[in-house]
Length: 272
Image (tube, rainbow, N blue to C red; front, side):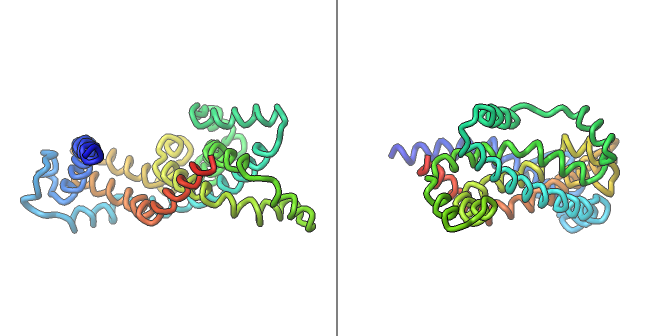
């Protein structure tokens, strides 16, 4: 009985804060401009699905933004996961006070926002401003703390026996890392990858300052430029359609990855 009451309370809490906003976006993306301007929750009196989504795909810069988002998200996630796992191995196995201090500094990077103006000046001095490469390098450095924070606890929980046995058999340090540590860290690295994908895919702040021109715009920037271009008469139906198309890849990632994310979190709790 207590469980039923708990889930009922959670459902009632979720309806106004989660379900209603989602329904508002979805149903108004199906309406013509006049109906969508009312921001109502009712079904469309006139359906305009094909027209709205066709305009977004044709004039909203969606396909270019999708390609650019994939072009920066994939290398950032791969680099952060690999470098973060290597750093977590060093932090988890070392007893050096300097490395422990560096670990806490990396943990603080999750909470403290980086300074954007020095970053822009540095990229400009290196002739990397305005393009995808400078953005990828910046985001890689700023997001390393997530994987390091998640993976270091896992490394500390693992016994050294497997690493010592591999070293006795003649494996080098890189081989121990690739063949022993990475497979053991797979659950937590998968969780970290999902967090990174969501974080990087939705990033607007860094993209606004570090990416220049519509040719380099990611999906959040494309949405912003599309909405700003119609600011005098904001077409909510088109904006909501763009929002849904921008969110669809993340929904697909969640549907595919949810079981493995829960399994990784459960395994982490058991190891902890």
